[in-house]
Each structure stands twice: as structure tokens, then as C-alpha cells.
Image 1: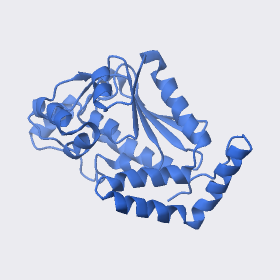
Image 2 (image 1 turned 90 degrees about the horizontal axis):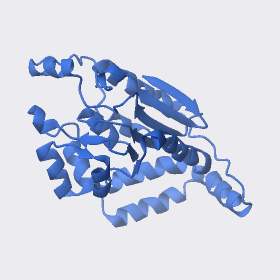
Image 3 (image 1 turned 180 degrees about the horizontal axis):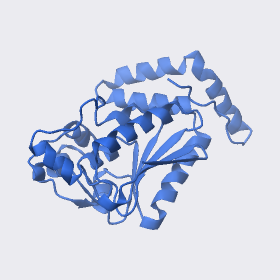
Image 4 (image 1 turned 180 degrees about the vertical axis):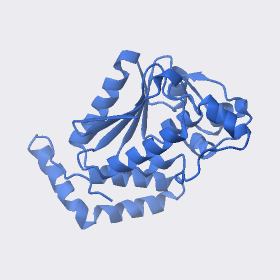
Length: 256
């Protein structure tokens, strides 16, 4: 697992290029530990996740899959859910540079924004391994792409291109492979420079909660959030920087 921090952006790279970054329990622990550490790092305001080499993550490593067929998990002591990155209070941008399936797709789904390299392949793959829709995929996909598209992806397990994923709304933007990471990092740097960390954390929480509540409750909570004293300095700075035509100087998100 690699991590580089610059301009308020942490870039995490899944680093098993010889295996197309196939998922292992060791990788899982390292990634989730890093997510927790970056959440508390006040120098980091946005995070980009990508893969080394030609792949993003094709799912569980074949050796781990073989163990699972024998009832061996190797995950003793792994207590965090596969969707643990949802707990990150900062924006998470997935830069899908290549093959992305199974658990790899789950990690992309829990990101806030998804960019993909032209021609990259994405798949749920679960049914093609004799598995059900695991790790919340049956909850996330219908909300992202609609029930019809979700059923297509979950039932068939077929691979789709980044271009088809964009048409479904699963991917935000398709880019040439050599522009993918720099574009994702530039997007994250813009958030880090110009957007309030406290406000972005609140927006993430609002969107997550709004998936299961009525619009009146959403509007009511937003009205209460705006009145919180802790948000007033950011609001004053946001207005002042706009009026003075300068970049804002927002305080970092404090550790948990």
C-alpha cells in the first residue's frame, strides 16, 4: 500500500501490480488503517484511491477465493466492514485505472466520486463465482444506477466498460488513461483548496442520511446545521473570500 500527500490531497495506491492489485486480508487491514489515519491527519483534506500498474482491483486474490470455498477466511480479527471507507469524513475520489470487480468494485462504490480510464472494465462478478450480492452491493447499486441497471449488473455479473458505466451514472467521468490520476488529483486539490472541510463532512453525512428519510427531514436538518456555532467561521470566511475575490482560508477538519 502506497500513500503520497501533496497540496492537501492524499493519494492511496493499491500496490500489488503483479496480481492486478487483487485483494487480500493484509491489504484490507493496511487500507482501512490508512483510511483511519488520514481521517485524523489535519494536513489532508481529500483522498484519491487508485491502483498500481494496469488494474484497479479485480476482487479477492485467487488464493483467498480458494480458501473461502473450503470455509477458510483468514480474516480472524478483521472487524471492520468492507464498506469501512464510508466512515472517512473527507471526500474520497476513486481513480479507476483498470479492471475493477467484486471487492474492488465495492471500494469504488463507497467513494464519493468515480473517475475511470477509457476502456476500463467494471463488474460485480459475484454470481459468476457462485456468490450473492455481497458487502452492501444490493443496497448501493440501485441507489446509484437505478433498479434495472443494478439488476443487470448483479444478476449477470458481466463486465461493462467505463463508457457504459458512465452512461448508467456509475462513473462520473471517463478520461484517457494517462490523464486519469492527474485529473483526479486536480479535482481533489480544488476541493482541498476551495471548499470548507467541515461543510464537506456535513454534506457527506447529509447525503448518506437522506437515502433513508423524507425531504422534510432533510430540509429541517440542513436548517439546524447552518445554525451551529462551529460553522459560522467557515461561513464568514466563505463570504469574505468571495467578496474579496481571493482564495478561502478554511480551518482543517479536527481529528475525531
